[in-house]
Image (cartoon, rainbow, N blue to C red; front, side, top):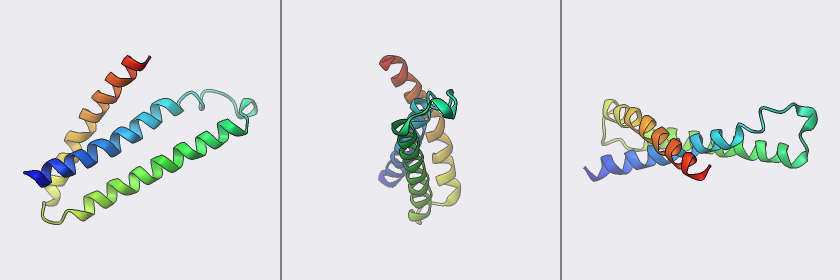
Length: 96
């Protein structure tokens, strides 16, 4: 049971990081590229690096736990996605 909770929390945190960076990066994609300055472009690059690293960590977490079957890992991932989306939506409404 401890391993299931650990892998669920890893999935939850990585998906939450991807979701929160998507929410906060959406303001940069609504403007044209002519109005962006160097700092905005560097922020966009940093956001994509964070998303890339989080995605790679998701894949690594999925492959690392061999004692859990792939069906159970997939089920935990499917449960972690909506729950982290719900928490991210809740946190952004509090922040705004």
